[in-house]
Length: 185
Image 1: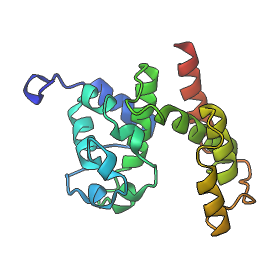
Image 2: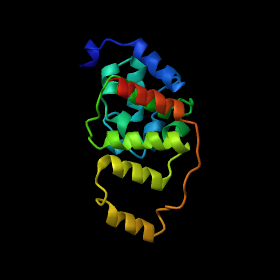
Image 3: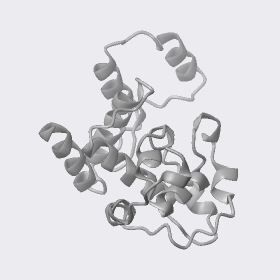
Image 4: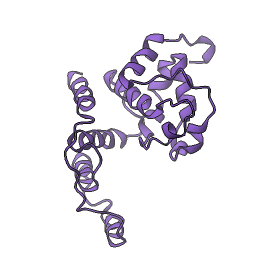
């Protein structure tokens, strides 16, 4: 759909912002979020383009972009924003809306990664390396694909299997909402 024929959806923009608890309105497109993003090379929309499309209410462009799935939630974009637009929360909210509508990412590994991420956030309030790896490997059923790499990381002290996170409730409501919508479809 080209921009000339796009019908803006203020309802979509409002819904995403309501789920995120953040507004895209203060953005003046300085592109600092994009300049700092470590995953911009893998995105079809840069973080600034995502926010712009959201502000326009371009539901199709936002929900069918790889950007909402590729984002690492590192919050670099949010930290760099001079207007304090919480781009990370907006991206996560767009993922939730996409899941609610049954939109499947074009990159096939993303759903397992995303679900493992959300489950670990639900259980621990942050990502612990061991629980995350175990959850992801159980979902993918490829237990030994990365085994050699894991041993290398472990031998270099880059993988800490003993640092188990303690329980946290930060993302439990978000996780419940996401999983309930997925089960109802």
